[in-house]
Image 1 (cartoon, helix red, strand yellow):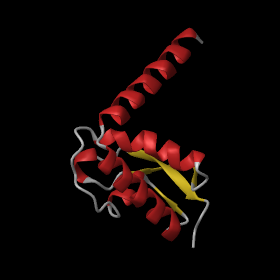
Image 2: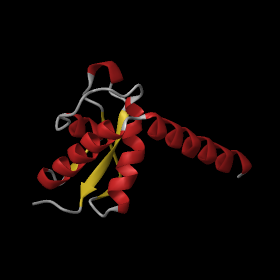
Image 3: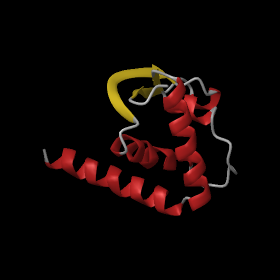
Amino acid sequence: MIMESTGQAARDAAMEQVEAAAQPEWKEAALDAIYTTARHRADFIVDDVWQNFHGNDSTRDKRAIGPLMRVAQREGWITPTDKFRPSFITHHHATPRRVWESRILA
């Protein structure tokens, strides 16, 4: 149990760090992309969000999208499922990605 909570704390700290390092304009564009994706897809993985990203690709670490997915969850736009799909981005080598469910599908 100690290792699990330590791992969760490390994950949370890393997520805070990458989010803090991202430019505000990039974060705004990423949230717009998440919202757009949730308005048009019943479920999706983060790879689908990148297809709707239209901002300046100016963040050092694209993992900053993770904390923003949590923001979208708190806003009630999306909810995580217990499903995973392989990434379709070539350099991610089909890494499993969480499937998110839209709560605002138009």
